[in-house]
Length: 176
Image (cartoon, rainbow, N blue to C red; front, side):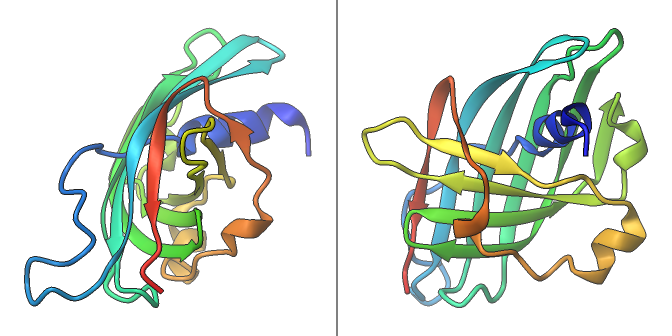
């Protein structure tokens, strides 16, 4: 696959509403929860010029991935003329393995060069390296039909090809 579509996919995948509680238990009953939150910016080369994006993430689920929730938001540019984009949507899957996480989200709002992905979804990957530089990655954006078929099944985050972030960072809490 050419590099440009992969880079656009990565750009579209980077996002989530940062903030919220850092606590790793639910307010209803104190059940331990896996959590991922934070915000980071990446830059990447494209044939059309430099691309960049900011990925904001706030995701949570039970220790086995049950009852996922949260939100992801991404904004950036593919580097091409008219390449600016913004996407956001709710978390449909969270898988946490140690300091790495896979998060799928449905694209409920999409604008600019990502407008055609509205209704579909994407999977993003987060690596929390403590005080060292964190990293993230993204899968290809999917159409609504393709995403619906596996929206609740996250891939193994250990298998993602991560890129270090330029600024910002993430926190991954594994309650297994």
